[in-house]
Image 1 (cartoon, one colour):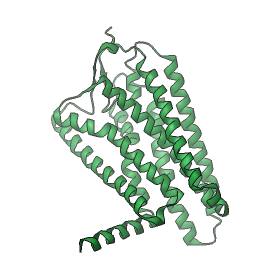
Image 2 (cartoon, rainbow, N blue to C red; image 1 turned 60 degrees about the vertical axis):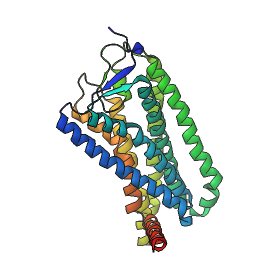
Image 3 (tube, rainbow, N blue to C red; image 1 turned 180 degrees about the horizontal axis):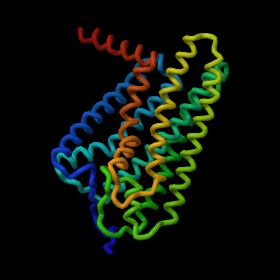
Image 4 (cartoon, rainbow, N blue to C red; image 1 turned 135 degrees about the horizontal axis):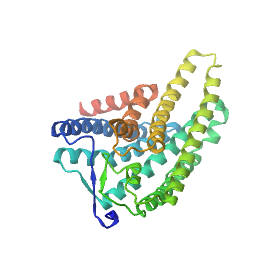
Length: 310
């Protein structure tokens, strides 16, 4: 069989080879990409401009928006270009870059979502100690450790993925260089890669359990609150976060743990959309439209722009 390690390109097979559907896919992904860019840039701008939002929760939300911008920009623009140009190749270095940055940003997002759940736990269950526990220095250290540790893990993961000899046709049955699809091109299983993937899944599952336990304590505290307004405010910040985490991790677990068929189905492609495209697009909607502080800050920003223009 041909050894792919000597080749310089991969073929991203995408959703279909029917030209009309390719154009429709490109237009839909373009709209989603523009919406994600606008939403996340707005959150970054508002959290920087509005001093009322200079709190730990919005500090982490700003980091999450940076991650989401990178996460969706790694995969979607290339997929849009390929569909419009009817050109499905990606260079070897381009594929390596996609795997590294996607894995780095996706796993950093898991770590950051875990930190955000801890922030909500401290804010609701230990409000009197919140300022001392979630100081600015602590927040910076938690965010930096999430970025750095997951970045180093992505280097190890990418190196082990592409150190495995690949055989046969260089066809990746995805719209981006997804690791499960690259596994199917391997000449033989690589134990080192399975170890790296296993450790990552253990880390992600540990984060998921930590988040669940945090919210069990949070919801038990919220339900004991005498104020209906206080309960509503707490639920409005916690429930969206829990929805994002569940959607992101459940789709990722499914993609990496279920047996990969020889001919991937439409369901496999749709599942990949749920952990690559949906979270970066939905996060701004969830955190802005359902959050009173964000809506107030957006109104203030809009009024400031109107006053400047007039």
